Length: 72
Image (tube, rainbow, N blue to C red):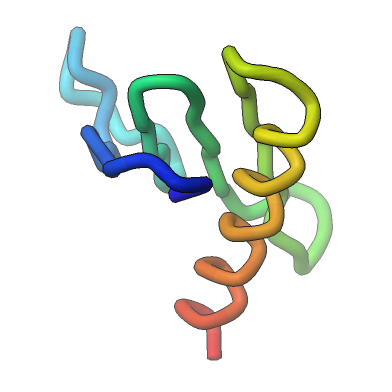
């Protein structure tokens, strides 16, 4: 993802095994989370990069592609 190997894919919180209500995908230098909105018929995507804005833009672009493909 964004040129890096995916290290983790989570659907439950590692601390207490509670559902996170979506999906979180992490690499060494960034992550994204996707979850359905509680009030609208949309998915929200959150992300963070530890390398800068262009890296974050690539993470978010690929996250959108992954969500769109998964939802068909």
